[in-house]
Length: 176
Image (cartoon, rainbow, N blue to C red; front, top):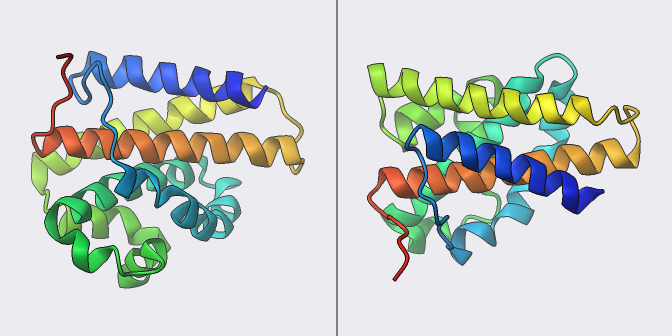
């Protein structure tokens, strides 16, 4: 079930983001960023799971912002940022969990005004889509299956955040 659900989320997000020109047909591979998923995800889950009940779209969307932020840090000064053991806590502690999106957009990605609004709309739509698919599964809340499905959504949002940001910075994946 887990792999099938992950494929469903992946395919839906890829189709949507490719359709609006935010990712390429071929998604990037960047082990430096993808290898950080596990530590970022495990650090994020206590906050994200707690917030999910009242703010599901924000709880999911914050992970997409984290994927974008790690891609930007990778491109800027990875020799410095790769030494930070817990990148999630590093970013969260700048302004707190509730303002994580603002911190990432303003201080990490350096986006303002219209670009900020566009990113917020795209992240909101992706998180809402993931949440919709999560709810469609009709998994009993509080179970291991529900937790696993939540983590699948977070992982895909992180990876697509990375892919979006890499494309925004000019990294395009093409068949050769």
